[in-house]
Length: 451
Image (tube, rainbow, N blue to C red):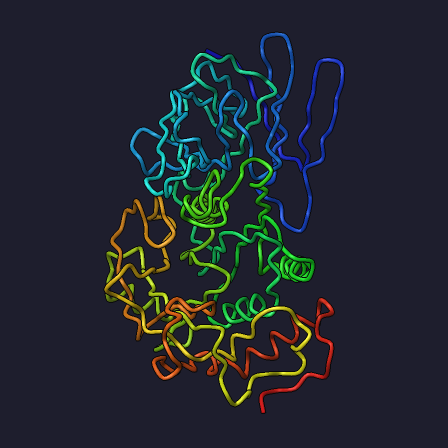
């Protein structure tokens, strides 16, 4: 039982206050703030005045456990619960936990028991994505939350998470964005600048309003590009320093890529991005940076989704089939081998028009477009829990253009399909890519168009 009094007022700083001293800690400010602290929170316990430590980082270790917390969101879709905390838990060490809240201007006289829901997909790694559900005590206007193991006293130095999506508790306002793309992880000093730029500008042409990128490490050239796009407001970069807390795997099979957690915590970032987008975006696209969800019968993605939603009104999850465009095969004319891009690191996707036919008799991956308000849990290639139905989109309507190493390396060139759908956008795409590269000083030679 705790007797805490929290008085919260709006400010851009978090203050740590005791009876004798006042120490102000400036919130971390960069081009993108990972879940910024926006409340100054003062905590009264009996005669002493102290404050809460509010998270300023994306990943927060949970004291006296082997778990990591990421973010907290208001969510009343599950009966008897009000808040969902997204985290990464050591799956063989999950113990009973309790939720403790900071209540605005009120006294929280007790904690409430937590319910931990590990995601069913963890690919056999020791750590996995988890949701922890909490019920807010009666009479508490909760602003922040933390977890404590059962039997542990609350340490006032424990870090609290701000509760996001507070509007979701009532009648939520209409989202301001139509489409958000979630890019789960950049790591290994990723520096594929040209393909990254082409993909972002292609998504802009297709009607995407925001791209969220979780960044563990990127190369120096890509870092400059990320900064430019985030200053513009099109890209939101979420720092993802998972390698400071765990030994993340570089793959999805522990036997081949050992580590603590699958693919740098990809499942956690995808779910976090969905909840981050609940109040602001009608649809969320979950895919990798080398993938473009491409319409084949419409001019943009919202036109596709409008048609699909009319045809399938109960659907809230749309599965898009993956199609590999092997980067080892080049279009022979050299039409889009543009000299101004010669010095730019990365792959030129316009030069790759040969497409593998998927092996549908074996496992074939899809990526996902979702209505975020209808999704509870997602995996990489399908959803785990959804309030609405899912629909597999025919590939002649929409498919993924995925330029990468071949999946079926034995196929010869005459066994591949020629697919030049990207070329339909080249007239608008090329000058946009040139402009983006020029902003960061990576366009070295005179700009030319296709020959």
